[in-house]
Length: 353
Image (cartoon, rainbow, N blue to C red):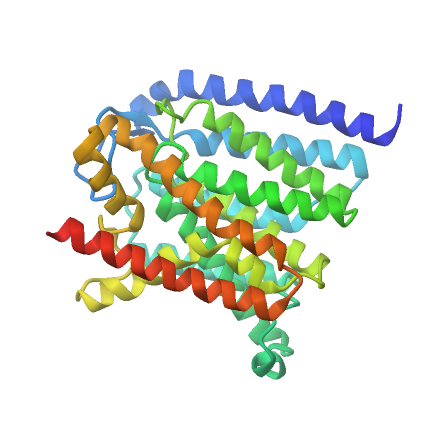
């Protein structure tokens, strides 16, 4: 049996295992610790569900990815230390919130920064290609490049947690990103790394079966932080493995996660609010309010996810055609920034009035 057949067999087995893990978690997690994992707080500004749903998707995801780490070791005799340490630590930070342990957002953010900086510095994980000539002389310093890399991780991980508010919204977005990353790596013969990305797609699809269109399970903060950390590593490593591709293409790929965090931060400062506390004025929330006025809250929950990800996909596809052209990729990224600003401002005005 050839290597590709063995890998395909392992992936097929892993897909079945992942599905049953999510199935069992969705069935039994409501009784864990007398419902401590149930999301039944309907008064939160980011709450848009009307029935209590378990936030145990993160538990199923961490079990699934752990099993794949074992499979990866059996196939290639390699231990993915950077993936294990970073993803597990981000998962544990999210578990604190899922278990309703009271920790101030600033302290949680500080812990996240310290862990990310420690692990990225120790494992020498940094973005090698930034396509910004004016910053290259600073970026050559390992300390500054580590800070920049940690900032990117923070944007992606918190962006993932931020948009994880509607059925399928985050998982569909991460599936699209991972499919494109898998395609790029397969085209560049990075087969081992492609297998790791495909495994994450399988996990997200398994979760999606129990979250979309009707949610029987949520990822929770633990799952959002976990999947956000995994996608961060996927993007950084793919960027480093493919120097011919502009780093601005990867920025384009992540523009929705980036812009949500960026605009949320400065909008809250402008409104005189703390940028680290949640509110209900994000893009996906404003679009939900407009849709729910026509289709009702229940149907609009999953329609909103489809609409946003469809628009997202349409906007990033042109970037695939000139991803090896730094200037064109840079221009397209800033065009997306302009489109986002116009679209968000219009929705904000319509919702406000």
